[in-house]
Image (tube, rainbow, N blue to C red; front, side):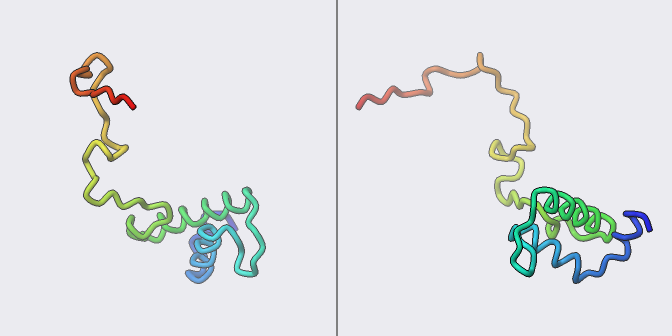
Length: 96
């Protein structure tokens, strides 16, 4: 059985258990996930979500940008302002 076949046949309950283990950092029995276990589990969950068409907003690691989407607060927006474009008048010196 290949990795792809294994993920295709993965029971939804096992997927949910893997996802919860990643979120909590421990297995259902309370043992802590090692970094390697977390990495392998995360890869399996991501592959499962892509393969089974889980909506993007329900996928592990999804960040809802909400009202910040498309603004300067959104890291996916590139800022074209260079250092030379800064107006020194916009800063106020505060003395204590």
